[in-house]
Image 1 (cartoon, rainbow, N blue to C red):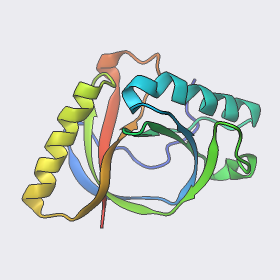
Image 2: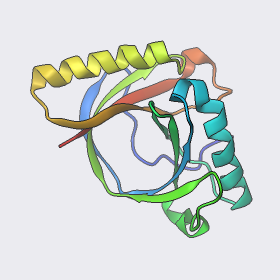
Image 3: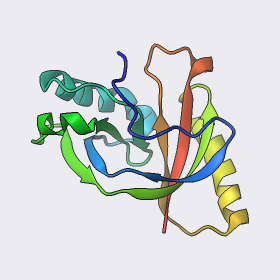
Image 4: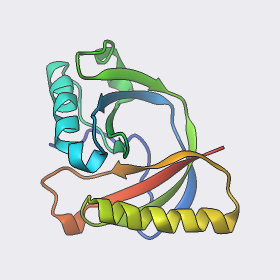
Length: 159
């Protein structure tokens, strides 16, 4: 599975930045538990939806941690293929957002997420940046990428 395009540029591992994410269309899958216990169940309906509708895979995948939700971005030239909700997938148009972002590398585990989140929140406190909502994960690589090559981010929305 290779991605057709990136929804926005990644934050390099070890870097912290403020960036604006573009508006766009995302597909949402929801679970009952947290993201780390539900990720396989969250992924499957989204993958079926893009296959059934002929939608190219994009990166990154966004993840709300609790309750667990997974979001696939739909490429701008493919939004006409993602018009209707299905039984397990919601189609959502999201506005542009300003976020604080920390880039990291390693396996997509709760421990790695928490470590990056802690560093981001420490930076936010030091900088006096006003946030809203909970930090969430942003994952750039597919399941067959070795853990030591995977990159991810933790974002938190800014006021």
